[in-house]
Image (tube, rainbow, N blue to C red; front, side, top):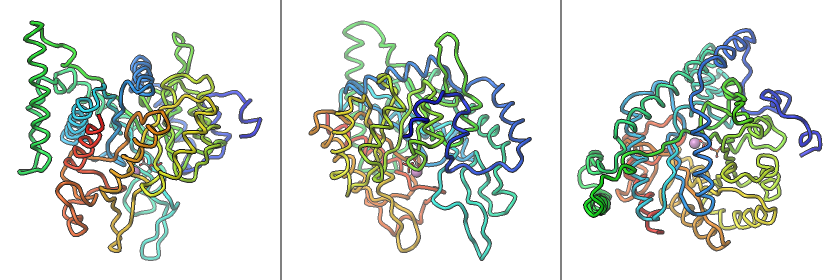
Amino acid sequence: MDAHATLSAWTPDSWQARKLSQMPDYPDAGALAATLAELARLPPLVTSWEVELLKARLALAQQGRAFVLQGGDCAETFADCTSDNVVQKLKILLQMSVVIATGLKRPVVRVGRIAGQYAKPRSADTETRDGLSLPCYRGDLFNRAAFTPEDRIADPALMLRGYERAALTLNFVRGLIDGGFADIHQLESWDLDFVSHSPMADRYRQLVRRVSDALAFFESVTGQKLDAARRIDFYASHEGLNLHYEQAQTRFLKHRGRWYDLTTHYPWIGARTAALDGAHVEFFRGVANPVSVKIGPATTPDELCRLAAVLNPGNEPGRLSFIHRLGAQRIGQLLPPMIRAVREAGASVLWICDPMHGNTEVLDSGIKTRRFERILEELEAAFRIHAEAGGQLGGVHLELTGDHVTECIGGARGLAEEDLHRAYRSQVDPRLNYEQALEVAMRIADRG
Ligand code: PEP
Ligand code: CO
C-alpha cells in the first residue's frame, strides 16, 4: 500500500482512478452514463437499518455467540429468477439454519448469495470456439452468455435488468418470511423435498421432532405462543464486482453520517479483485456495510493485516469478514499464520470458511466438480484450527442449491463421477445439492 493510497480521500467514484480488474469496458459511454443516472434515481434495494442490524449480528458471530450461514448459487442468472428457485433456496437455507442452530445452540445469521449474484470474475478474458475468439461471458449483469459478438459486448442496460431481478427476488423473500413461511411452528411442513429413502431424511425428521416438541413444551408451560419463532432475519449478499452498479446505488445517509451501498446488505470482494491498491478495495473501504474479502492461498499474512487496516481502520465489530478458501490440502499450512498475524495486528475480524472454491477440480471428461469429502475435510480443519488458535470459526460460505442436481461427487447417497451427467445444471461452479447441503449442516451441528 503506498502512502498516496492511504491518505487520499474516499469518494464514491475514487475507485475509478485505481487499477481495475475483472471489469470489461462499456463501449457506449453515453449509454453507460444514462443507465447509471437512472439506477441512482431508483429506490434502494435494502435499507441502512437492515444493514446495521446485520452488522450487529455479525459482531455477535465474531464473539462466538452466533454462526453465519451464507449460501446460494455460484452465479444467479436472470432466467433463474423464478418462484420455484427462490422458494427452494430459501427453504434449504432455513432448514440448514435450524439444524445448525439446534446443534451449535447458537443463533444462525442467514445470508443468501441471492438478489444480485449476477457478476462473475473469470480466469480468461476471451473464449475461443472453432477458431472464433470473443470476450468471455462475465455474468448477466455485464453481458450475455450466447456466443455471438453482440451478446458478449458489455451492455449497461443489463444493470437495470439485474436491479429489477434483485428487487423482485427480495420482494418475494420478504413476502414469504412476513407471511409465515419461515415459522418454526411449520417446520414439519417444509419436509417435502426428500427423494424417497434419503439417508438424511430420518435424521432430519428426528431433529425436527425434537425442535417441535421443545417449542410445544415451552408454549404449554408459559401458556403463550412464542412469537419470536414466527419471524426470522434473512440477508442478501453478492460479490461486489461491477463497481458501476454498486456506486450507482451508494448514498450518503445524513441521519447516519455515512455512505451505504444499498444494492445488498453484505457485499464481498472476490479473491481475484482483493488487491490492496485495486479499485474494489478502494470502493468498499468507503461504505459502512459489513464487507467480506475472499482469501485464497496467494494472500500473505501481511497482506491480510493491511487489508484489515484499510477496510476497517476503526476496528468496528461486524464490519470486516475474511472468507478463507484455501483448499483441504493447504488449509493446515496456510491458515494458522494468517490467524496469528491478524491477531498480532490487533485487527478485529469475523472468520468464515468457504470450503468450495479451493477444492474445485476438472475431471478428464472436462467436467468441473468438487468432492464432498474434501469440502468436509476443509470445513473440519477450519473449525479445529481456529479453536486451536484460541478463537473461533464464525461461519460457513457454501455454493448450494435446493434442487437435486448432480454436480459435486460424494455425500450420503454416494454420487459418483458417472452420475454427474444426470442433472448437472451449473453454468459456473458445481454446487452442493439439497441432500449434500443438509448433510454439511448436520456435520456442523455435530460440533455443538
Ligand atoms: C465465488 O464465490 O463464486 C468466487 C468466484 O469465489 P472466489 O473469489 O473465492 O474465487
Ligand atoms: Co463460485
